[in-house]
Structure formats: structure tokens, C-alpha cells
Length: 120
Image 1 (cartoon, one colour):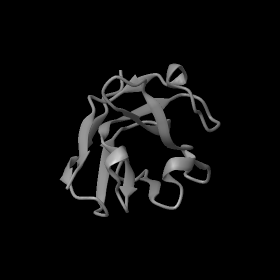
Image 2 (cartoon, rainbow, N blue to C red; image 1 turned 90 degrees about the vertical axis):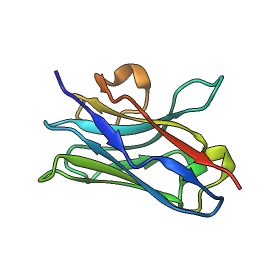
Image 3 (cartoon, rainbow, N blue to C red; image 1 turned 90 degrees about the horizontal axis):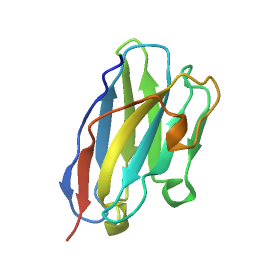
Image 4 (tube, rainbow, N blue to C red; image 1 turned 45 degrees about the horizontal axis):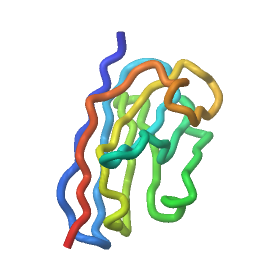
């Protein structure tokens, strides 16, 4: 069983930045998902185990960066230029699949989530 622990969420103003972290040991592809109240959980960004492959949803391209430090067993989501519509619970997830993975049902392990609120 893999335990994923997210941290770094909080309340910020529009235009601010946050950096989420997720600790996860093992050889997994990783993804960050967001879920706003009343909405389905959706992919924000994902990264292969090597870190050479990344993917971003259009809504976050140019603002968010996913990265990983395998020596520290940590995956990051750096969020810049935050907007009110980025408000959600953010989850990190791990998949055994080698390729970039986009659908929640293809992920094997999930963290507990961290709240990100963007409001003036």
C-alpha cells in the first residue's frame, strides 16, 4: 500500500502563488487532480516516473508546473497566477502505468487532498 500525503494548500489572493507537495515512495507516475464543490474530480497535470513526460490541462498551461524529485520521493505542483476558479481540493495520485495517465480511474493510490482557496 502506498501512502500519499499532500501539503501546501491555503487561502491566497488572486495572482498569488502556492506550491503543493506530495510525498510518495515507489516507482509511479503521478498526477494532480482538482475537485470543486459539485464538480467531478479532474486532472490538472501529470508526470511520468522519470519526469521526462508531463501534461497540463489547458486551463493551467503557462501558470502551473509539475515536477518531481525522486531522491526525496516528492512531487510538486507550483501554481502561479492563481485565479478564483482554481479554488478546489487538490489531490495527488499515483499510477503504476508507465505512460502519461489522464483519467482518475487509471490511478491506483490517492492522497487525502489539500484545500486551495483563491479569494480577494
